[in-house]
Length: 338
Ligand SMILES: C[S@@+](CC[C@H](N)C(=O)[O-])C[C@H]1O[C@@H](n2cnc3c(N)ncnc32)[C@H](O)[C@@H]1O
Image (spheres, rainbow, N blue to C red):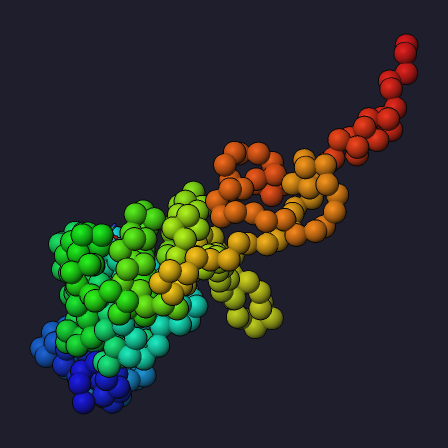
C-alpha cells in the first residue's frame, strides 16, 4: 500500500509520523516522531520513543506529571499548523470547493496558485491516486514550501501531483491538452486574466471555481466570466462557520469566529461554439421605476450591461418611483408658521 493510502493513516505510531499532542489546557503541539528525541516544554519532557509503537489516540505523561493526548493530526489540523509562505484556504472553504466544484476520484484538476499547498492537499485527497492535480505557482520558493508540506502530510510525493513553477497563463497551454481538464480551481489576485487559457483547457461541462478575498475581485471576475461568453452564468457565495462552546449548561456559540475568509464563484464551460442564453429575470423594483414600468414582466439583461454605471438600480437598491415620491411629498406636513 502506498504511503498516501490508508495504511499510512492507520495503526500504531511509527517513526516519522506527525503527532499532535494536546495538553490539559487544550493547547496543541505537533511533533514528528524521531527515535531518541524528546519534546520539551518549560515543565518536563516526553520521549518520542515512548510514543513510537503506541496506538493513535493514546495518552502520555511527561516527566512533570502532565498528561497529553496523542493523535495523528487530521488534514484540517495539519493545514492550520503547517509552515506557510502565503495565506492558506481554510478547511471550511476547501470543503466547499471540493463539494461545489464536484471534484471526484480520478478527476483531472488544474490549480493555481499553489501558495502553501493547503488546497492542493484537499484536491489530491479528492482525486486520489487515479486522478491528476496539475498545480501552477509563480513563486519557486512558495512551490518548495508547498511540496514539503504535502510530502510531510502524505509521507511521500503524492503520485497524482505535478507542480509547475510559472505563471498559469504562460504555462497551462503547453502542460495539458485542450479540452482535457475536468475542474479548474483558481486562488490568486487576478483570476480574470486566466479565463482564456482556462476555457481552452476545460472539457465541455467542466467547472471553474475561483476563491477571491474581496467583493471587488468577485465583481470583476463575475463580469469577466459573462463577457467571455463561453461560460454559464456564474454563481457566488460565502460560507460562515461559527463554532459552539459546549460546557455543562453553557451551550452557546463561541464568542470568536473567522468573520471573513473569501468568496467563492463557480461557472461551467459550455460546448465549443455555444454562447450562453440571454439571461431573463424580473427587474428589481428600482429598475422598473426608472423605466416608468411597474410591471413584473421579465426583462432581458445582456451580460455585463447592468453594471455600466454606479447607479442605485445597478446596485440593486430599491428606488421609489417619481409617482410615489410626488405622493410622499403631498403627505409631508409643512412646518407650522410661528
Ligand atoms: C493565496 S495564495 C494560494 C494559497 C493556496 N491556495 C493554499 O491553500 O495554500 C495565491 C498564490 O497564487 C500565486 N499566483 C498568483 N497569480 C498567479 C498566476 N497567474 N499563476 C500562478 N500562480 C499565481 C501567488 O504567487 C500566490 O502564491
